[in-house]
Amino acid sequence: MKTPRTAFGFAVIALTAASGTARQGPPPRPPQLSPSPLPRPDGPAYARGFIHDVSVVYRNGTEHAENVDLSLLGSGRMLLAFRGGGTGQVETPDARIRVFAFDPVTYRGTLLSEVGAAPAMPARGIRDPKLLDWDGKLLLSAISRQAGFPIRDLFANARTVIAESADGGASFSTPAAAAFRGTPDATFGIWRYAARVHREGGRVVRTMYATGYNDGDLEAAYFTTTDGGRSFTRLGSIVNDAAEVPSEAELFFVGPNQETAVALVRLDNRGLLSGGQTAVCTKRAGPEGLSGDFECGRRLDSRLDGPSAVFTVDGRRFVAARKHLACTRKRTALYELRGDLADPRAAVSLCEIAELPSSGDTAYAAVAPIPGRDREYVLAWYSTPAGSDPPWLPAQLAPTSILAAQLDFKKYDPSSCRPPEPTPACPPPILPPSSRSTLAGAYVLGLTPSFVPERPAFFVAQARTQGERIDVSLQALDQRRLASGGDRVPIGERFDASGAIRPDGSFTVDFGNPQVPLAVWPIGGGLPGSFTFEGLRLTGVTTSPDAFCGGVEGDVVIAPLAGIVPPGTRLLLEGSRFGASRAGGVAACP
Image (cartoon, rainbow, N blue to C red):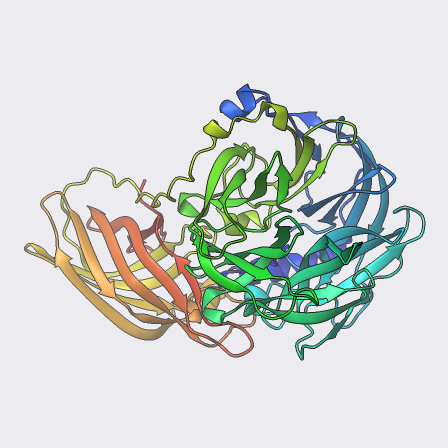
């Protein structure tokens, strides 16, 4: 799975969590899977029995388990693998790939082995497991990055690693870094594998391909391997455009002789927390197989985070991925892909079959056919407990569970599949009723971003109402000094706005695009640099002469910072709140 693209101000929490986890050791893990059925969700897919037997199959209350993989071995045995061992979605040396023998019908299983990253300085973690049944050997491919919580994996020094099992998964060798040929960049983390099986001159040829993306999310490329992932040869680019922010790419083959490769590529081109897009890319194989760059002119207007293997049933293609709701909430959903995927000129579309029970940090699903059951599959994913619904970023430090459901395509009704609804805007906070109060003097204003409400930014606000006018100026406070000793130390330039104040005390002030030092948000080590509030607008009410509060609109655009912040790092402020008071006990509107 993708190491999360963190927000500034969130890094300090994550790094603290990482060091604490390292001191405490891995959380305890159950040696047996103990499935716990969930109530049947609403919706036609569940009512018809197409999606059924939804259960939590793994949780221990403290662990952030994620990155699910299912592998049906040639022997008919199924394995479930996921990344565990950490208390948050942060790269940590305590991370482990846990491999279970797994029954796809009862969801019961036994822990076979745990695989950690090879000892290294600086310490490294491990994630994104892929189990490969290769020439009679069981291989485990994964991505290892340096411990920490980098923004879009920049300078995380990613390495694709491979381990081998000689006993069916009961033990694995120490993961070793794979070799890359044909590229000067060794930080490509292999995301997915895809085998092309075709006929050539009367014989059947099987070639293994793989996709990966590099540190900074600058390029998604594709490779071939002849030794099960121990080494890779670069064949070309899929998306090579830093402005598109490409990362996870799911690869599959279509056509009567699997002559066309199709890749679905996650694009964060609309910002870190927004819906974004998915590139639909194609490459037709030549006489010598695949080589050269993909064509990527088509887009799905939905960002599919971490798409699981695209699988085909009854001539239809399906994929499970993370979807995006308002106010940075997330869900896992099952989709059908429609249209001629092989023809780069043909229209393609996505329809949504159903949401799966999920919230917070979720998705990175896996799917596999159930042996002996016609057109039946098991689907597994991870999620924050479905009863809660936290924003995505803080949920990355909260416990998660592994869930599973069965899909019976004999009961699938294509007419119930609907185009995804546009992502709704995050509604502004409800303002309390208020009579107009006179403001004058200095206040402390706290801005609570919707994407990480636990980390407000603070400002000195000079506010004054005169007649039908309100004037507000803001100057950032150094968060580290404020948190450590309560000192109100202004930093950066002051920025001003004016607006009309209405008889009920409500107002809107537009600050435009002020630039603010990064130190207004708590960042580990006190990073230099700045960000821009793009279109910063406060809509609020006066609640007394000593306080005012309301909602915040705009975007946060972080200036590129060599080695730390890559270009194109944007966060949404929609749904954020502010509160200001003379005493400094800042709270949002009641």
